[in-house]
Length: 312
Image 1: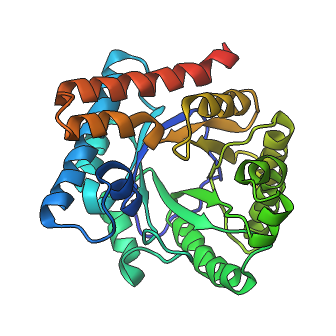
Image 2 (image 1 turned 180 degrees about the vertical axis):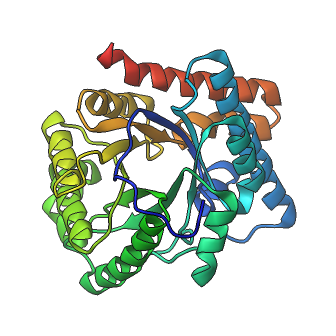
Image 3 (image 1 turned 180 degrees about the horizontal axis):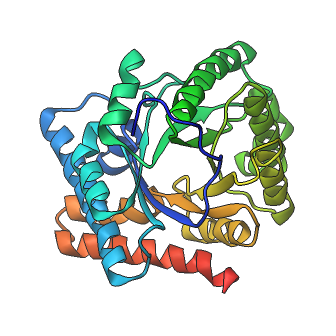
């Protein structure tokens, strides 16, 4: 790609089923039960785990349970550079994070040199994870808005696609209003905050092709989120995808059914719900590597089938 191109139309045409494993600190905590400080051996173990996950996705593609052009991986450079290159070579849709991991406020990975890393790996989508509550830290939101607008403009100028993972952590006041119940907050308040958050980011000049969103339980809320994502000139093709948040099978499947029935959703980006248990079994010595790969492939393919079923 040349360094400067005419911005492409926003959005994406077609389905996207991402096997997500760009987790860094969260990966170590959820699979290795380790905190932030890691030994070189643990670092190598995490990289090996990411290869097992990728092999599971490639196995599903070879088996036909997900098709080329829809099969995708979301993987980081730090632990998954080999996987990223393998995905490009295999024709699997590649998305890579461009944010520093585990920050309260968005910061570009590699500082001012983030663009060099994007150009080097040439992913189909650049991805950010951002914590943004419209009723939360206003000064922090302003800082994030400025940084994200700069990233958005850089990507658009180079014809690169932008995938935006929007997380809405509740404020103390919002949790109090929900009676201290996190699930009540998610059901009663989060969808409206999601709509407002997208609107605020759009108003700040952040242009997104795919919004990666926490699960939405009510169809009307899912439709409202898509309507906001597509509000404004040039955003008619913007789409949304649902993330798994490490939730249990029943709730993840409900989110997939809601998303699949909503025009403007294009698939999912799910990670821990697919690969956490097979990896833990493999690392514990209870599961041979090839069986871990097979289990990941089967669960990935099963969730694709769950998403496809309502549309059949």
